[in-house]
Amino acid sequence: MENIGALSILLAFCFAIYAVIASVAGKWTRRPLLVLSAERAVYSLWVLLTIAAGILIYSLVTSDFRLSYVWEHSNRSMTGMYKFASWWGGQEGSLLLWAWLLATYSAVVVYQNRRKYRDMMPYVTAVLMSTETFFLLLISFVATPFKVMMLGKGIVAADDGNGLNPLLQYWTMVIHPPMLYLGYVGFVVPFAFAIASLATKQPGDAWIHTTRRWTLVTWMFQTTGILLGAGWAYAVLGWGGYWGWDPVENASLLPWITATAFLHSVMMQEKKGMMKVWNMVLVSSTFFLCIFGTFLTRSGVVQSVHAFAESPLGHYFVTFMAIGIAGTLYLILSRLDYLKMGKKIDVMVRTPAELRFVLGHNPFPDKEPAKVAVAFLCEPPPKDLLKNVFPPGGEQVELGKREIYIYYPDGMGRSKLKLPLMGVAATIRNMNTIAKLVDLTDN
Image (cartoon, rainbow, N blue to C red; front, side, top):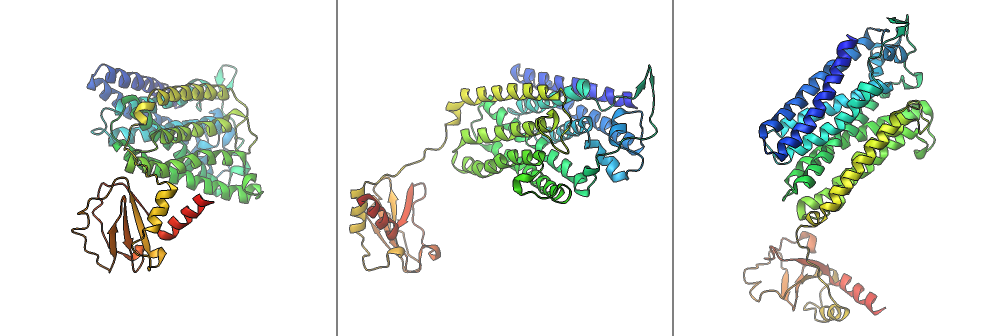
């Protein structure tokens, strides 16, 4: 069975390479059937990795100690729950989990968008499969989970295995790593859409809706994983203050912070077409911080109870990140003009003299200043603006030069007054604020 597992991974590696080449070539040569074949390769890859993962899990549960991975991370005395958790308890198995989750996400993305974003999807597929190719390269040729125990030229089976690290045999550690991986791997999808939008210079921001939904789901997984990791660190390692967590737990915070910022700032792009460059930086940073966190765990750079021993994988991760960051920076810098295109934001400027004029020509001097508001406009208001305005709560409205004075007897928050300012840029301040601004300019 180990041969079937190894062959499945190798075939998946070939399919991933084909998907990258076919999707890009199909896009450039305008051959939709070639793009379609790349998407079919994604489905095939998922099936192959599911077979490989199933064989490894079966070997762990049945204590097949012919496999070196099973011998190193499992034993007969472990419960079924921890035998299953051994899938991600070691270097090779966790890489397979990473690759399988990415294949799953990729298959879902391709299926969901089989009729949408057809201009972008070839590049989305290419980015997803390029990342998949990197991880399959590692588990195909560098850290295979199907390495067998050899004695001379024959395969041997040990009587029992070493077992999982006792510190990792805690109930949250059965859930915590998969949750973190669901977050780490999931952030590849928003990054893929971002790169595809840059490559195709998407005229609109419709793809942002899909990206934000994916980011929200993966952010939720990441948050859950971090909280579970905090519980494990508290109960098993002993609490040493917030930054006294295990280093690997701290590394998982980095992409979480940038993803949180992206979730907030992307709303500005959805509503006003702003912050496009910043959002590209945030979504790209989140992806590369996920890869960086995975690198820290596997390179031996940091000492951690669930970081793996020093291995040659670190060089592969550094190379992958260097190429990826360079390519991303090139795309962002070469598309700066496109990214800066958006809705025009009007800026209203008033000199100190103009503010004093507004304050001195208040048509409601006997009213409470907090209840008198001034709507500052870029242009003088039309003389017939108030023709069809009927204050519902006793509000009073007067026109100024480039202002509209409004008195709210019950306060602005409770008023139902609607002014016909649709499409007109305006900013509103009450008289107290204006008076403070005048004092500041005088001082």
